[in-house]
Image (tube, rainbow, N blue to C red; front, side):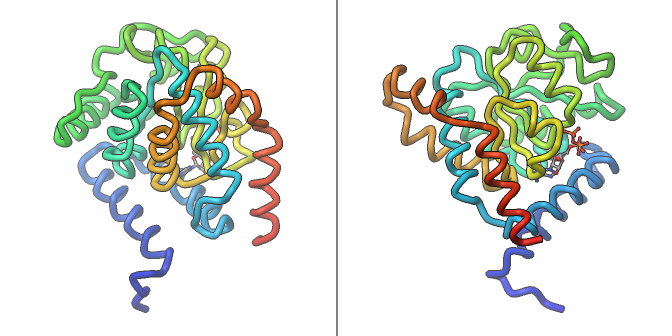
Length: 244
Ligand code: ATP
């Protein structure tokens, strides 16, 4: 059956094709495809659009990025194939760095491929010289760059697994997470959780950051402290339950 161009499923198909391409060129792993499928199911239940509560979380995330001295956007294979250009835009507006971080082997090779993918869009990113370790993680994901995630005050993670999110938080980082599942450990461990698809959330955070770029520190701090992550997660969950 041909799906009309305006139908949200078309967007989802586009994402699937991007990941299939990533799988072919070695940036995405089969496990990444499974994670995508999990996300797709939640996205379906969320109506495949950015909810009002996700917008509110995007605003808090934008304010937190603007307040941070050393923000880093952490990208894995899926994030790279789905939203590299949007990550570059957000990095530009907020002054954040981008760092590649992957779990499944071949780790070194995939970090290089991700860096090259960003270089094709004219952006140099970190992750190829990961020599420092985040404590509490035995896996490859524990290795980060000294001038990137290791010294970051805020890390934005997306399509991330809970172990790494929790370890980053224990290492004193403020965490902004983009995760379609409000019940995942990542969603539950972050300071600001945006329950939305990365392909919509990153542009929305960038829009909010652009709006807030001349806002003073005091006002930005007010936005962050007024944001209640638990309440926001409950609102997202209620939306899912309504459509389930
Ligand atoms: P956790 O370890 O945090 O409990 P998990 O075991 O599901 O979660 P992963 O598979 O590593 O861990 O995480 C992938 C997460 O990313 C899932 O919660 C999934 O719903 C979410 N996800 C997948 N695709 C997207 C996407 N395009 N945008 C946002 N979130 C996504």
